[in-house]
Image (cartoon, rainbow, N blue to C red; front, side, top):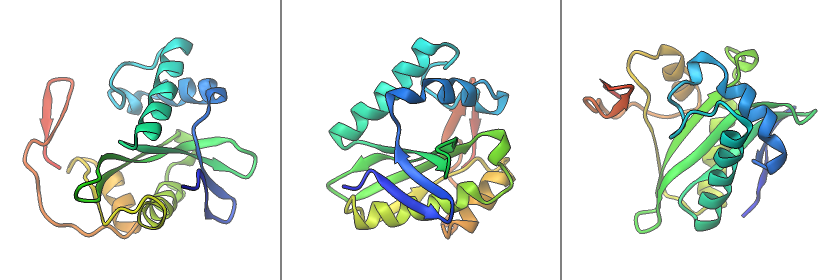
Length: 166
């Protein structure tokens, strides 16, 4: 499977690497990123563990995460297909961007490219993408990336003890 994908002019998807510790730590310092990882990413050690987890999941085929980078290899965000189910050829799309990349179409372009990669390279048949209903920016990303609304999942996600519809 390819581990570099051109997302659009000047935008690339590449596998995360051990050299991305500083970029990961900076990204997770954003208050909007709180709760987006299984453990807080507040130290270099935590960033290293986050990166190691991405690599491990790639190797075992359970998830495929890409750093979204510009032409200078500056990390702008992350797109991933997780919860990969090989029996049914399905996966769950997730994404985030750093503050400087928001409202510029970066996440939607990256998600479209990720979807093409997932179908063409990873052999998946169906991708699912869910966002909290109280997050209109994430809804706009999903819509711009071409994902269709199929319904509402009541209280699917939990963040800090609060359940959210998706």
